[in-house]
Length: 393
Image (tube, rainbow, N blue to C red; front, side, top):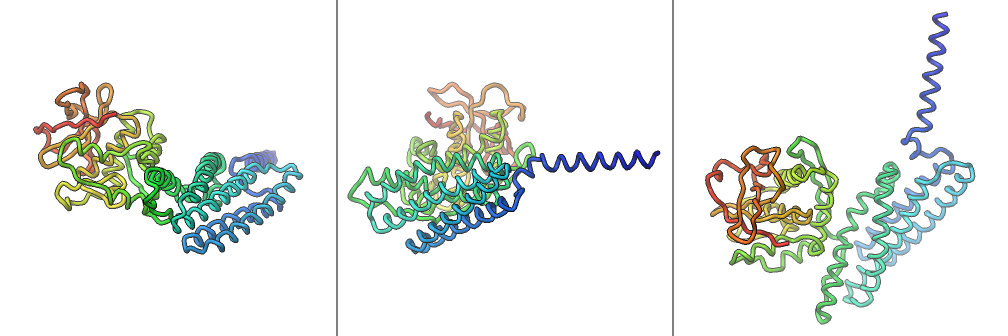
């Protein structure tokens, strides 16, 4: 009798296990028929053709790149056939339909990029801008589709390499926006051409609460060079403010700032998370040229000293909607952040108060040395009073 109960129990466990397998979210992402297995392979093949087309475009082989995109379209149509056959079998195909929709939109975007890179390389700005307008519209749709797949169907997103592809395409989007503005301002000077060249950065760190974070960003060579080539002179207090780039002024910083929206809802914790990122992930390097201030994009790529890292920190914070200020010591720079109420992470925090016009208290932020939270400073600065330069809204 006891053995019979054991056997019955094992059968129940086996039945429950099988049921859970078939209804588990993971199983929804896996091919459940021969047709879906074939569709899955074709989607991956189409993605690989697109990547080859991108590589050919980088090499200047534009006609071959367009031929490869045609091949990607043909493979995508083959995937659609298998998806429709699986649907006729009453099998859930939504993840694969989403994947195909993403690839079809991506093919259109890469076609536009291929023409844009070719035309801007020849100096044919007016024709290039027409393709840019189309790309910017389609890329907006592509971002929505890719975000939805990454959230709902991460397995499909991983196989189609969606996250990395979007990281690599966003700098192209920003460069096109810049190109259109430059071309609109001065029709007699050709803007620098569009290209895929750039600097990929991956950041991993632990924040003030010991939580691990990571994200990737790519900055185009065009964007980097544009900041390298503009004035870095700062002779008066007001000159320092121009280095804090935010919002539509610098979409690259806006992208980084938006990433921190997914960290903490508490404003103090979010601010500390951003501060820990600047402290941990951006190399601290000694002063090179006296009074040479870097723009945030330069600091992300090169690293920087106290004023450079403070500028980067304040740019991200400003883009996130914080009221911020420079805290200037005789031989050191920090950031300053205005937060409502008392700090929970630091007792007796250090603050700076503007000389005139602004009644807020700005909690001091050390960006060079690691482990300092908002409102805590190295020992040598505890008895010193910084000059507070408020960054205007």
